[in-house]
Image 1 (cartoon, helix red, strand yellow):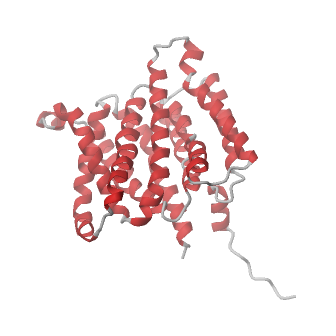
Image 2 (spheres, rainbow, N blue to C red; image 1 turned 30 degrees about the vertical axis):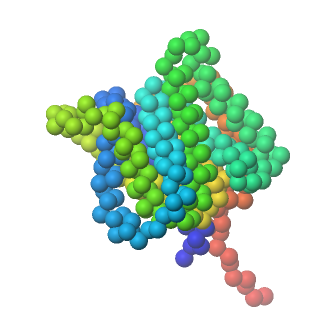
Image 3 (cartoon, rainbow, N blue to C red; image 1 turned 120 degrees about the horizontal axis):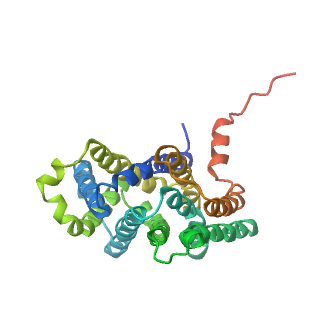
Length: 317
């Protein structure tokens, strides 16, 4: 049986794998449905799915009044702003740009953990952070560097994805202590309620019309189901549960799996093109991640190596 820490790491890895495949699915869906409508439906059905499981636990949960404001803030950061910025940004930019920007989550998390949680950052990690920042700037400014257009939708989309990344980092940092005090499923449910209240007013013109649901194609139904069940209910539960047993920095490092899967899927299935500017930015980000994270003892590659390296019995001579 795996240790609690290893289970936490595996939970974070699974969540990011599911999110990695979700990105390209959402990108295609957003050609047919508005971002905020998609998110609102995702939130509403997530709350409905969770309610029967959460209700018995909710009655047993005693909340500290001092934590209520923090829970509200975490819900706004992790759901309203993170998901809102992500979907709006993804509708304006490419999936591969989105994936590279998201890959810097671990770098921003490491910096935030250093500043607020007093987690240490070595000299080599600092060099990696600088390289990743440089690569992120190149990716974000890619529309300007390639087209010279400050009005490019891709630029705005890239900036929104960066804001989504930063709000996720804040969510992870702030949720670290709260997750230890309360039931993970209850917290997820509350966060989704906050998200539902936030998004439904912006999507009311669609979600309250029967004709809208009748017009949904089989793919849109699949996309909504995937995002609701896997990318929302299951993933957020795995992340919050995993944070009970791993550090914020480790959770941030594991997020690199998400963009790797998304980039590969976007090139193969969406036909997105890789430009010279994109390659330069990606190489800088990847180099920074390599320096900053492969030396970390809890990097996923090290964890998987440890899981697969079973001690052998010494043979008697």
